Length: 263
Image (cartoon, rainbow, N blue to C red; front, side, top):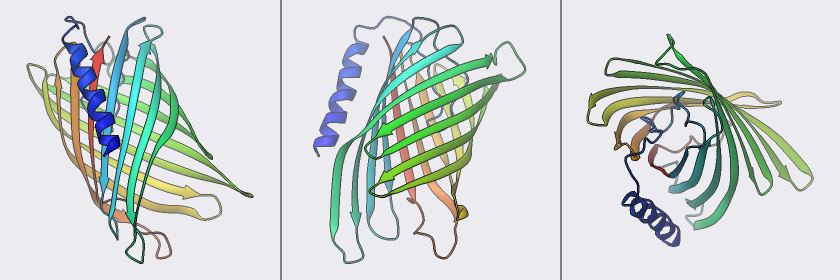
């Protein structure tokens, strides 16, 4: 409950700032899992609040991931960002006992470099890198971002690679994830967009080979008001492929809400 109050306060604060914002242009996102190649102009800044809900496994499972991010344009092609990450998780064990954890999940640094502008080239291309640091764990994530708008239709695709280093007493583990996401959206005008996203994640652990493959997909809605925007996706799990001796499948449904404000 405390976590929800903190996030609601952040949302209220962002909306409060909207009253004082002018007709500036925000770097709106049309999808929540699939990134686009656009970057902020040099010296421009933006605040983003993220809220992700995850639910459903073999037993009771409910998790909340939240991020508070500030982005800034470094040059006309390069964008940086800093995140604070929070998480809350409630699970049920094999004995029917419930447990809950709330914690500061860590902080992240991000760089995004646009190679080609989709409005001036046949396709938009950008490179994305993020490093996340938290207790006993470090993650590095890389994306190749591609997108193109043709009339009222926006297409976007990401190729994703992630490595996670887990540090435990007397034992260190390295886990990899390879994935992809695609999004298509119809932009009828007035800042509104309606579309869908698909996301695939493929786990890999050294010595064990390719592991679980998870597929998610669902509808997306976004709105761009100029100085602020939001994007919402509902992503149920479509399919999971795993070995017999692996842990149970990932969460059955994800929902993510993003709210951005140009400052």
